[in-house]
Image (cartoon, rainbow, N blue to C red):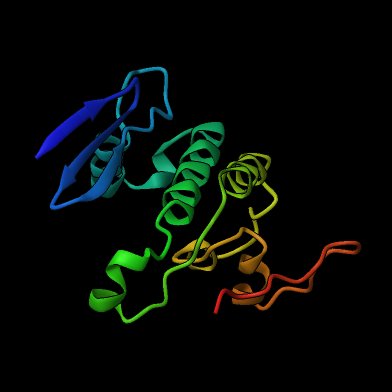
Length: 137
């Protein structure tokens, strides 16, 4: 295995496949997202201040969105892989951070390609002027 580190992301390559792990720091206390998930599981999210809850909800939506179906995992998941361009992925992250999907269930952002697919998956109407997502074939 080969490890590559960046500020808040690590990647490792095994058998020619690159895997990424992330650390999301939603609070100024320095907890990473994994530690914060453990604290929330023990105490309950209602123990956090509203602003911290909103940050956690955004982080969870980002976490779901960044779990996209890969071509290399089709055999294991039974889901077709999707090609998502860098600009589309970054735009989706920005839209999540701007709370466009605040009223959507987190599952609507899980294993999708473009963020627009969340509308279809959540059964929400497409916004005026927005084109419906076309699933990859």
